Amino acid sequence: MHSRLRAALLAPVLLAWAASADLDVYVDGALSSGWENWSWNTAFNFAATDLYEGLSSISATSDAWAAASFKLEGLFNTYAGFQFDIACDPSTLQLYFQGTTDNAQSASIPLSAFAGLSSTKFTTVTIDFNALPPSGAPLGSGAWDRLNFQALANGATYHIDNIKFLTSITIEPLFLSAEPIGNDLIAITTQGNVDLSTVKVKLNNATVAISKTTTYSPIDTPSKTITYFTLAKSFTAGSLAITAGTNTSFTYTLPAVRYGT
Image (cartoon, rainbow, N blue to C red; front, side, top):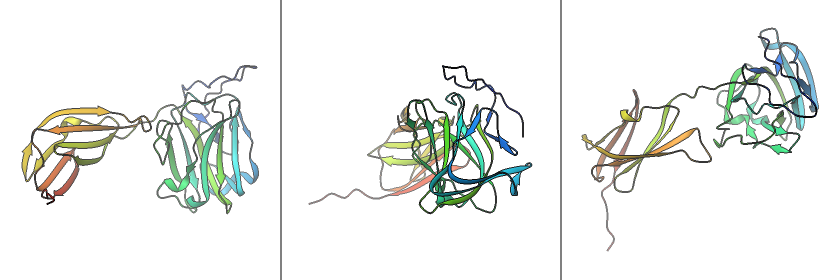
């Protein structure tokens, strides 16, 4: 664990903490400077050693709809994302952010949106503020200063460690999907800085040239882009193979066109 930048709260103006370094929320044994415990109906051990990384972790048991809630003396608007290590039953918890001065509240993020979480081991979760799971929508504007790990209807027992806000997030470049549309279009959804020049299309094992591309980022999921590739010839019945990058491929069997009588 490392000490991080601490920005002061200059009354009466709330200042955003400068994002020149990651902002720790919890460091072994205690909340970091600038953070307050605003939790409700939750029992804590801030120096748990039954399951931990480093020297200790937070062990928490929350009643139904109660939360481990931490409030910053300032704002975390300038940070790119949020990261923490957690051991929990993911079906029992959700996470959301708040702005206490403007009553802003983010969409709830169910912990079940993250694969591989377990109550017996820590898993690192990273949340990109440009694409909150599971919808992919951005966090949006708000005087964000509070985070909440909230139990659902049956309550929750969990461990959290290494809680921090991140100055930057590297988005892995991926080709997520590729689909034929209409007579001669292929829609390819991507994330990150992919190389679109690697996209190749074969129809019945014959290479088809791409005559035009159009790319846009959906307003509700700005971390992803959709590119429409216009082919030099129309689709025909048979096999369609789309390759992209070094090892990504999508295949389809196109049916023959049938006309009603």
